Length: 451
Image (cartoon, rainbow, N blue to C red; front, side, top):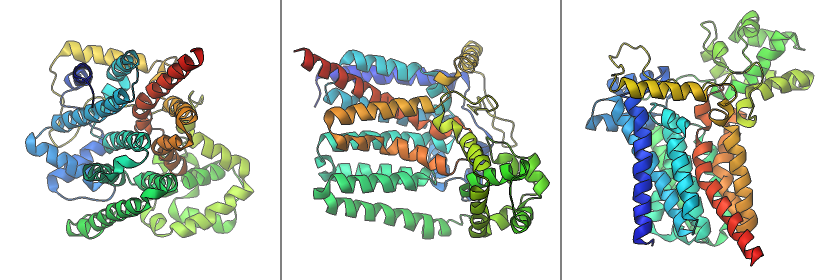
């Protein structure tokens, strides 16, 4: 338990965060929506779903709009959930005796950090998914500091199951994080192996029953997809564009999917979109022949190592490189609602607040400042450093705290479609919990050495 003063501290912190994040909702009321958002909204209206966007994410929109039919209902829900999860993390840090000054600075930074405000009001599946990864990190923190006992409680098991299902359902790559977390927990806490196995079984049964028979009953359409082929596609395009070594058989196969001249002309080192969304790209054929695609792609790696490695490093650069490459781009955020035929549009509540928000956005996009706001690798490395410090002080098992953030980065190193900041938004959220804990441990350890 925490003291009355600490409870007041938490309440004030929550109010500050809610007020700062609500500023952006007022600026762009009733929220921000892109092409993906409009498509999900359309699915929600027609109650007809496809696998391109996670069905659970669309159903989340549906539930929010039962209370108030407006994109603002989703934006408000995201603000409330993010604030609640983050404050639960601060609550945990209070219990761990992190200095109030450190926590106050953390809360203010979290509340005032512009990227947070711009993203939390966008209707993207990535927002709730990132919050689920933050929640998973906080849960792992509780498990570690209780030496595994936290998971014994029935209510805690329910919380773990809920968050795990969020990770699994809100992004298709969430399965990697879930698998890594469960394997790591099984290795670290062998005495809780039975609980681990039961939890894994329950979560996977729910997941496969819902995503299998459940979605089938709902009439969810499984669209052909080449998302998992993103990196191989980029490397194929690079080999074709720069006249790398390619056999006649390989040329014939890739030409069947998209004319070779278009592979070359549409190649963008930082995005698969120009290729996969080209009207002549045969997505059905590529989706149905993924195995053959891989067989024709793999020899290209051996015969064109420099070309394919360069293509890979460029395409994944947002994940691992803090400073953008000279010819690269970073898709940051779309503010407001794009033109659509659903009657959704922005309603100006306060021109002054809108103007101020636009000014803040323009500042974050300035070339010299952009790396501090829109390059997620910065927060990835800070989180890893914090995790190493925590593990060094508290024990090697605390490296478990890095599983959610590192596995998410790994997932996009394996299959990333473009340089979109939203894919790695969780990096900042997780850093906001790990960094203050690491700072506290360094300060307290230094004081012990002094004494």
